[in-house]
Amino acid sequence: MKVIQRTSTQLKLQLVPWGIWMFGGIFAIAGLLPSLFTGKTSLTCDRLPDSSGTCEILQSTLWQTRRQTFPLEDLQGTEVVSNPSSEGNTTYQVVLLLPEKSIPLSDFSSSDDRTHHQEQADRINQFVQDSTQSNLAIAEDWFSLVGLMVIPSILFSGIGLLIICFFGQIIIIEFDKLSNQFILTRRGLLGTKRIEHPLRNIARSYVERGSRNTYLIKLMLTSGETFAVTPYSSSGYDEKFRVTQEIQNFLGVEPTVTTDPRSLLPQPGDLLGLMLGGNQKRQQRLEEYQARISRQPEDIEAHYGIASILALQGKQREAKEHLEKFRSQFAAEGKYDLAELLDQAIASINR
Image 1 (cartoon, rainbow, N blue to C red):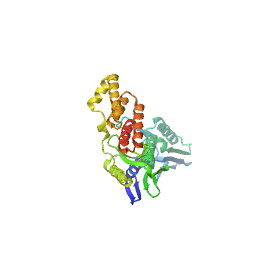
Image 2: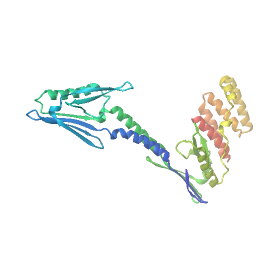
Image 3: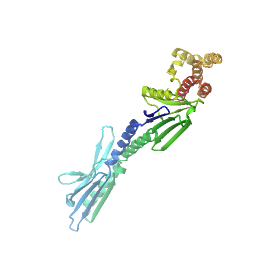
Image 4: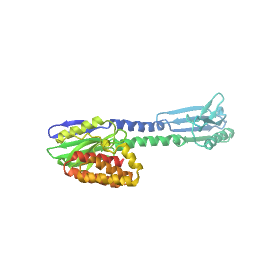
């Protein structure tokens, strides 16, 4: 994310997702490539009254059109050639038999049913043997014959477009002290979305740690409500932390908390004991944590402990409600660093 404007009264940041566009574009192009080289092929033969005549193979793609012409009397017949692959699949190809060479009806062999190819070969052989037939026309649409290739192509292109549509948004963040406005704009192929809040309602910004070393920039309101600035988690903590500090400095609030929420979780030994100790031990520990909070509501470790036990009991909703209750309470009291830590715990439950 890049700072594109910074004054004493205005801060404007922009994120252009070049990496997402490139990644999605690779998928889309990879999906389009097969269709660029598939097209239609046709065979036409015209027989004159003296049994002479000509045959023409016409192969057309988006890029080019190729013609092969040869005398009708050179066409001796056809055969269906089988091409087994190393993966155990077999593809088929109709080949025209001439005196000194063989000409494939198409450059592509197809995994379509052999019956289809044999029917084509039989039609051509019948025309060769029946001198009363004046013409032959066979048209083959390779978009249907190579369906097993086209379907993955459409899938790849669709995935590429979906990646660009849902993750390839240009993000613009504006903080304006003169108009007392915060504006978050997301522009993408699906349209533009704006989120606006009075600037005084923005409490702080911070980096939320996701799974597998991914991170998300979030903003917290004075009400305790939070929302993501970026539409997806990605790697690169240092860059995101720098952005949050830029926002914090502009807002004039205390530096963001740097405590790793994972350090507040019960230790592995304690957690294993809770998992194996049964409901009685978990209930006893739950009451201990609740007593600690009644004495000291800001005991974040106890809040994490309660959420962990409720989660072990399969009560994720109750765990989330407990954390959200105290997050809102801390935010209302202006204790945004504590609210941020509880929001990190809520995020871990949502994953």
